[in-house]
Each structure stands twice: as structure tokens, then as C-alpha cells.
Length: 402
Image (cartoon, rainbow, N blue to C red; front, side, top):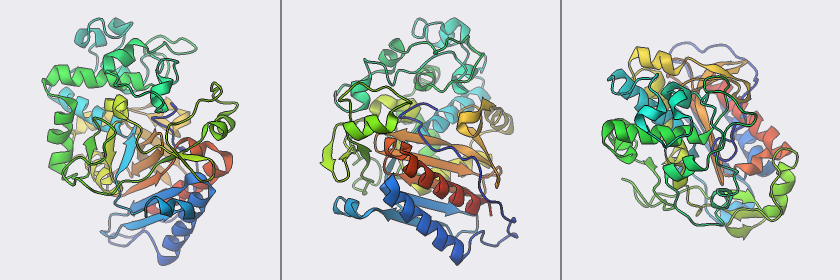
């Protein structure tokens, strides 16, 4: 799973439960109270701020917002706060591509070179399908020396998708197109460009016209810069995001990522060796991770998608045709993750940007949904924080499934 734009704790197991009868709530007061306790425990163990929203399809969503004490000096967390949903954006991008596939404007077997001549190295051998399911053979630009200062907010630079594709390395170890699953944000930068070329519309316009407008997602938009005060409900409160300072970050990532000394996130100092990363510009993530949304809005999108409202049956089936992706908890389809749990299979995605980590899933029918947001991304890679976060996601998902 790629760092920074898709860092979530994948579901692996959770305790099962009986399926509730039609019209019954899958939850109980005791289950809701347990979920609230787990949310507070996760917040106090390193997630800092947690939003949980469970919709069991009975019209009575469970909504929980918990935060560790010192973060209340920055803002009081609410379930409806705006949030950077990171790589969950990939599911929107993939939906837009598959809508064009249904219209026969784009074909899944089209080469990248056909649409973007000279833009992607080896594009003549990479198909649109390979971009969608991360089997393109492309590596990721995230931790390259050229891009790392922008990821951390130390360098304020506006990147174009073409510039990011130009610094994208091959997979390590190398893989031929179509051979191996390897998550890469570069794939979706290319897909955004293909969409714009195929439709003659900007990605921002496509998202408004095909997704957020029809579904009434008034708190959702594609970020063009670091500004939160955008969209129909301009002025709505947003979640404050945090990351560990440079010294704690290096310690947390030791053994997994070899960061140069002194590399850390830009932002004002906060307690417990954290920094406020809310003002880091996420616009580089674009089609791969640039959306701002809320728990309720994104659950609206994901339930519409998985219930068949946004795609014809043939394209939804294609989207759910997965390649093995154990690191994601199951498989990866065309912009959609299949996560297998002891409570059942769920469909959705994870997301992460500096200060923001999210997991959002539905059941197979798109009737029930769950969202868990945490106001840190790299912070929950700490062992204790990861354990508490995983327990919360498992409990919320199992409660959603009944």
C-alpha cells in the first residue's frame, strides 16, 4: 500500500455476528457505547481525532466524534466536518472512466500511448485497465528526492500531472506491464489526463456533473490548493490534521522507510511532538487523491456506486474484478478494494494525506456503509496507535455488517 495517499490499516479479521432482520437496526445501545469507547481509545492512543459513521441501512446512522484532550484547543471535532479523503478519490476517478467505457469513448484495452503520446514511459505496453488496477509496472513518485519536499509541505510548488509522471520511476523490483500488482499514484494521474482528453472537460467539471451534483454531495470538491473554504457550503468547519514531528516520524518509520535526517512535515508545533499539517497543499494528488468530503457525503457516493446507481451492471462487474492484493486485505479491482473480513466482504477504499487517514466501505449491495476518519496518517503507523485504530475499524465494520 503506497505511503501518504493510501495509508490505512487494512481490515483482516473481526468478530462475526448474525444478520439482522429486515428493518431492524444492526446496532444496539451497548454496541454503540462500545464503539464510542474504542473511538476515544484510538484518539488517545495516537489517532488524535476520530470520526466514525455507521449506516446500517435502517435510516438511523451511528455518528461518533472523539478527540484527545489537547486537540480541543484547536477545534471541537464534529461528525460533519470536512476531511481530506485522499486515495478514496481513486474510486471516483475510476467511476468516471468506467462511465466513459460504458459509452465506448474509452476502452479498457486502450493503450496509454493512444491517449497520452509520449507522456508515460512504456505507455505503448500499458493499458487503461492496468492503470486502474495498479498492474502497469509504474512505480510511485511520492518518496522520490524531487517530490518529498512537496509531500511534507517544506516546498510550496504546484505540480502538474505531466511533471509527476516524468519523475515516476519503474517498480522496484522491475515488473512488466500486467504482471504484478503494485499500488502507484502515478497510475491515477495518467487516468485523470485520459479522462480530460476523452471528454474535453476538466476533472473538476466531470466530478461536479457526474458525481457530486447528481448525488447532492454539497460538502465535496476536488481541491485546487490548500484552501478549505470552497464549494457550495463554503465556510464549513474542517478537521485539523496532525503528523509526528521529524524526530518522532523517523522513529515510527524506522525499518520500513529510510527517511533522510531532518525530514518532517511543515506546520505549527503542537503537543506530544506533533505538527499541524492542515495547511499543506494536496492539489498535486488530483485524480489520485485530491477530494475533500465528509463521512456522510462519501458514504452517499459509495452506496450509490455499489448499489448500481452510477454504473451499468457490466461496468460494476468489471470494477469488482480484482487482482490479488493481500496488503489491502483482499483484492484490488478497478479503483475499488475488496476487503475480506470474518464478518463478511466489504467494498471501498482507503485514503491518506498528511494529517488525514480514512477507510470507507459498503456491503456488497451498497445498502450499508461505514466510514472511519483519523486526524493523522503517519501517526497511526506507530504500533500502539495502529492496534487501537485497527480495533476501531474492525468493530465499526462488523457493526455495519450486523
